[in-house]
Every structure is written in structure tokens, then in C-alpha cells.
Image (tube, rainbow, N blue to C red):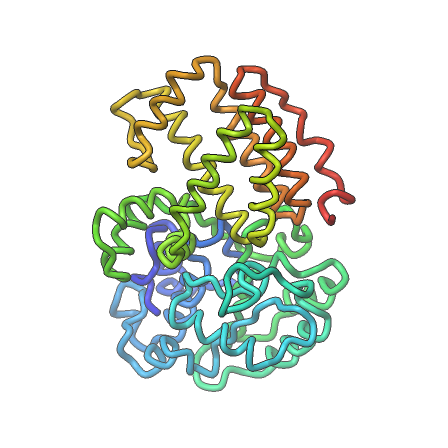
Length: 392
């Protein structure tokens, strides 16, 4: 998987090429940034580049043709190891299936937390998804072997921010005393939950949200999506190619967007008999579909912000909703759309942290109602941001 497979991220691609061509390779890296921005793709590209036999003649990038490259691309190279956090006692074959899918498409959503079942993306996880102590020990044992075929033995720990404090000390030994000719690449969405001792021992590589044009081109070239649909999905994906792929696969996207818009409209009404049935309907979808619906809600309100600023010249995500957006702006001249965006983002973060969905949506409805009337209450979500509510 050469660096050319990475979507966007030119700074990351340059860093990979420079490290490989200069020979200045650190033993521990942390690739961090939003989900779906190419961290796994870059980790695999970096691993392939380091094992490639011909990279010196290709500006430091993998040639894609030598035997190590072809093995790496197919997930058959014995010196590339991928690890995924998972619920305890997960069948080894289920872990292996997901890892193999990463080699096929590193942008696909295959982790156990966001997609507990590969057959049903809407299901929620039945167990805590972490790096268990026994798993860390098995990684240590595997990693203290010398490379089998290549110059390095490379381990890729996906979602390393799922390493808990209880097991971090075991993992720290690998960072503090790494075996020779071994490289660890950690990927993480959030670094604020990781131990400072882990962060300080890694060379950081930041990944930015993808530009819509990069997502659009990748959808057209890789997924053979029609140009107009690719443009719409790319703008809906909020900088994530993984989200774009999920939007393509979701046949209910139109219905979910309609539900999101109706929730906003009925929030303005402040009639419990209109809002509560919608909250109950949304709560039954499952946590991942709810998170997607929040994204749809956010895209619609962001379009309102754009229309308020630029009028008919605004480049909207929901182009087919331009008339409805125009009516909203005209009908609610006092609406504080910026605070609406902030409230939806706050609610989405709480749901990401396993806050009670129904309670979060109830509070959000009140917050949106006030914002649409120009009466913002910035502290409204503080009561929900507590361990008792988040773990409910």
C-alpha cells in the first residue's frame, strides 16, 4: 500500500517519504487525528515503504512492485503486525477478519467500538473495547522476535487511545526499551485520554480533516460514484472518507436527514407531545446511527450559518434543501445559528462518550429552541457532563 493510496494529507506523505529516504526512522510514532482521515492507510504505507527493496530509486516511496511490497499490500508480509482493541474473549478469527479488511481498504470502518458487527453497522458493542492486559502481553511476546524477512518488524496499534491506565505500564516497557529493528506505529483519534508517558515517547504526526474535493475525487476514482452524488456525499462527510463510505452504503440517509430536520423544527415548537415521540424514535436507532443523525443535523444547521452569511451564493451541503433553509433564515431572523452548531456539537460529543441518548436529545431540544429564539444558554449541557450521566 504505497503512499499514493493516502487521500490528501500531503504533509504526512512528505514526512513518510523523508523518514524512509533519510534513514532517520524513530522507533515509536503516534499518528493522531479525526476518524477517517487516513491514519491506518498512512501506517500501512509507511510500513510498506520501510520494507520496500527499491524505495531509494523512487523518492523514498515504496515501489509497489517488489516482493516485499506485494506481500505488504496483500497483508502477507510476516514483519507487519496489526492490532485492534476488542471486547474480552473475542474469537481470534473475528479479529483476523477485521485486520484483513484493513489491508483491503484501510478507510473502511472495521473497529469493534464503532462497528461491533460487520453484518450490522447499527448494533452497539456488547463489551468494553480496550487493549486487555493479556493482549498487551501477547503483543510484547510477538514483538521481541527479530524481523523474519525485512529490515524492520513493524507493529501498528489501531486506536491506541483505548489502552487503559491499568495496562499502560506493560505497554510502556515496549516504548522505553524497544527491541532493535522494531517500529511501533500508534494511531489515535484523541490524545487527551492517553498517558503523558506514552505521548512523550512517540514522534507525533498529525492528521487533518480531509478537504471535500479530495474526498469527492477519491469517491469518483475509487468507488466509481457519479460526480453529483460524490460532491454531495463529500460535503456531508465532514472531512472523513470513512464517513463518506458509510453514507454511500446507507440507503436510509434521506429518511434520517428528514428525521433530523423534523427534530429541529419540533424543538422550536416546544410541544412535548411533538418532540418526545421523535426523541424516542431516534433513541431506538442505535448509538452509531444516532451519531450519524447528529452529523446530518449539524450539516443542515451549518448550511443555515452559510446562508446567513452569503445568501443565495452560499455553497450549501444540502443543496436540495436550499428553499427550506432560505425559509428558515427568513422566518427566524433572531436565530443564533452559531450557538445551534455549538449545542449540536456538544451533544454529539456526549453521545460519543456514551451519555444517555434520550436525556441528551431532550436537553438539546431545549437548547435549540432557545437558540432559535435568540436566547442562548451556554451552560445548558454542564449538568450532563458528569460520570454518572455519561455512563448511563
